[in-house]
Image (cartoon, rainbow, N blue to C red; front, side, top):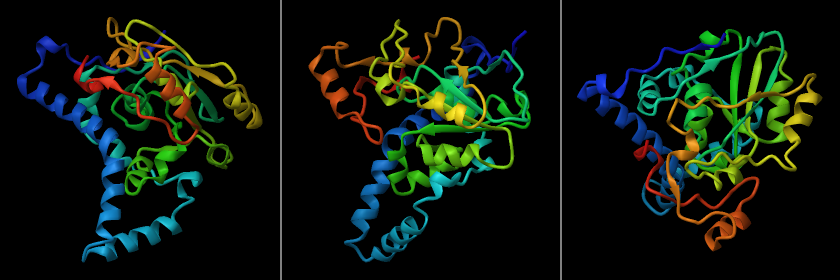
Length: 281
C-alpha cells in the first residue's frame, strides 16, 4: 500500500490569507528560476565599472577558488530546504509525494525521473525541499537532484541552488556523490533533460529516452540497477507538462526546430511559453 503525505486543503476551504501566501510561494519560485541567475551575472559585471568594483573582484576570486565545489557535493543547507515558503509552493498546485515501496538506506540509488516539464516544480518540492517530508518517508536517504551543469556557472545563483542539494548532471559530480563512504545517497536524474521540456504540451505525456543510457551505466558502475521514479501528479491536474502552453506548434515548427538545435548538455535556449508556469494551474 502506498503512503502519501497529508493532502493539502482543497482550494474552497482555504482562507484568503492562505491563498495569498501560496501565490507568493509560487511566484517567488518562478521569478527566482527565471531571473536570479541573469540578474546577478549582470550585477557582478556592472559593479566592475563602479566604485563598488572590489565586491565583484572579491566574488570572482571566490568563484575561481570555489569552482569545483558543485562537482564535489556542493553545500546543501537544511535551513533552506526546510523553509515554510516551500510548503506554500507545494500547496499552490498542489504537489504530492506518494511512497509505494521501501528504499533501505543501506545502499545508494539512481532514480530516473520524468517528465521534465518546464521548471521541475514537483521534483523541487519532493527532493530539493522537505515540503513533502522526504526524510520522514525515506529515513536515512539523502536526495540529490541532478540538473544542467551550466546553471552552476552563474554567479550567486550557483550558491543558491547548491543549498537545495542540486548537483551538476555530469559523470564527475555523480561519481563523487555515489562513491561516498556513507550509503543512502539517492541521485535523481531527469532522464529526458531540458530537451524533453520542449515537448511540454497540455494533455500529452512525451518522454525523451532514446540514446539516453548514461544513467543506466552510472547505476551499474556503482553496484546496482537504476530505479524508476515517475512523479505522481494530483488527480485532474495533468502533471507539470500541463502548466503552460508552448509558443511553437510542436515538432516541425520553426521555433521548435531552433530550440532543438541550440539545446546542449550545458546550456539551452529558454523554453518560450505563454505565461508563467506558476500562473496557470
